[in-house]
Amino acid sequence: MDVVVNASTLDALTVGLDTVWVLLSAFLVFFMNLGFAMVESGLCRSKNTVNILAKNFIVFALASISFWVIGWGLMFGNGNPFVGLTNLLFANGGVDEGFDAISWTRVPFWAKFIFQLVFAGTAATIVSGAVAERIKFLSFIVFALVLVGLMYPVTGHWIWGGGWLQSLGFWDFAGSTVVHSVGGWAALAGIILLGPRLGKYRADGSVNPIMGHNMSMVTLGGLVLWFGWFGFNPGSTMGVGDGSAIAHIAVTTNTAAATAIVAATVTAWLTVGKPDLSMIINGALAGLVAITAGCAFVDVAGAAIIGLVAGVLVVLAVPTFDKFKLDDPVGALSVHLVNGVWGTLAVGLFAIDGITGSATGNGLFAGGGLTLLGAQALGVAAVGGFTFAVALAVWGILKAVLGVRVTREEELGGLDRGEHGAEAYAGFQIID
Image (cartoon, rainbow, N blue to C red; front, side, top):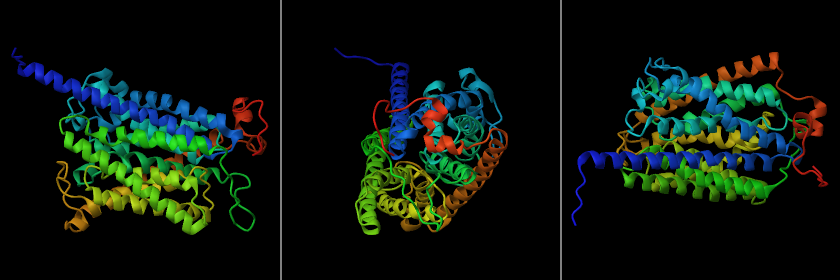
């Protein structure tokens, strides 16, 4: 029996499939919250576990509220090259009008919203690990609200909302700069204002290593994040119309992670004398961050090189930050800031015009000259300068009004007891 499908039915099925794909990808990215929670808590001391888990749990709730109230409108609303101005509040009640920059995907409005929301939440989560073990819970909550509601959407508008960087030919497919560098710059400002943890640096400036308490949790978290990245990058197609592009992005994403792991392992082995597990895991995350900008714009060989460089950078960045006494308990700066910058610049080096349909122009190594690399460098500098300056101001205001650091007694005793009145491992004798 012949089945006749009219055009309107076929169109509805297509939109339905696209919607399922976008929602599934959003759910995978949401699941990355578990990965961040496991990585961050495992790399810190047991006395701060409840605090870190609490921050990672509440941060997505905060992001959901602030992005809905104002963030979506600032990021995607029609406006000027610098910020959205149309239908700013409460995501326009779900009415898909005045958001031309994201009209290229035909999925329903709320599908677009939740997919973009999980990305916004990721930026705030990055900050959590970098400022761990000494920040006041309330101050982190306020900062996360401001970051997702105001700071992240402004630079996001420049790149994904039809803003001035997008017009100049800046490309960031899934967020090496939009998400990861923004989180990294905001975290750097927080680290500077907070100062290092007690006992992290000796009087002569040398590093006193503070070891994480549960590498099993870190490994679990790392694998969850790797898995979630298959929603982060391939899902950014926001439709299933081009299966070839989705498959290409999945392979470039995985290849960069794989080569970064190998590079980080070898680099750690050569520099510290041991194949350090934390470096192996952060190597994977570095490769994933680095390929996020160019996963749809480079070939597999280019992705492999991007990952190799990322794996080296993440290992070398850790002692570099320590030289400046920038205490980052989980390596968030090395993973997200350094490799967010590297991955964004790498588009200008390795991009192949139209490889998955996007007219990026060719990168330097594909014969395109310096045009694309220049646009990428300008974007890195502009987003970095804006985010760092505003974040530093916000942290400074919080420091003056609420204070940002717990007391010496609370830090020594652990934030679990001091901030939450709880213990992660009650009844166990644990030596930090």
